[in-house]
Image 1 (cartoon, rainbow, N blue to C red):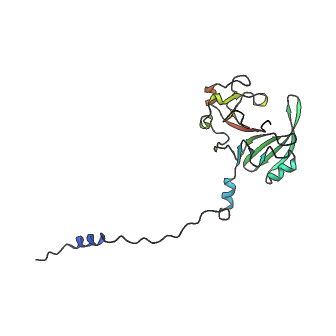
Image 2: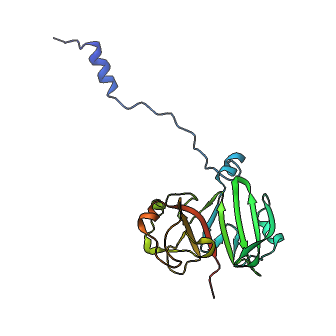
Length: 201
């Protein structure tokens, strides 16, 4: 006697056959310089602070306003003087888009760069105003600064690095220049500035 399978069972058996074919998808092209929208390019632009310098500026850059202006065409580049211990030191300032603020010293070649604002990031992606604990420094990596950096700490990834991370806090860090800062006070601090100084030869 032939037993008739219910219709639902027959449909279930049919579903167990070969899987339904998937429609091929068109390959997605990788983003290139030509395909990235202009606003995305501007939003992503940032200068890197490292042991080599800040952005396009380093030890080989002439300390001349024209040379600096050519590297920052969208910024205001001016000459000025900074009073240091009673001496007027020539500086070049850069004020650019997205609140970029740089201060450069010479004399013949750029010997120091202080990045005070804008889209400047460290070699590990550190951003200005980042809280100190996120920077993964220890108190032993830092010293209390002198002169304009008194009350702040200068931290380096390795001894002798050209790049220092200037750590500030609400209120000054206690201690004398060259001292290791207090760990509890550092924990309340933030990345105030990047300071690059040309390595001594």
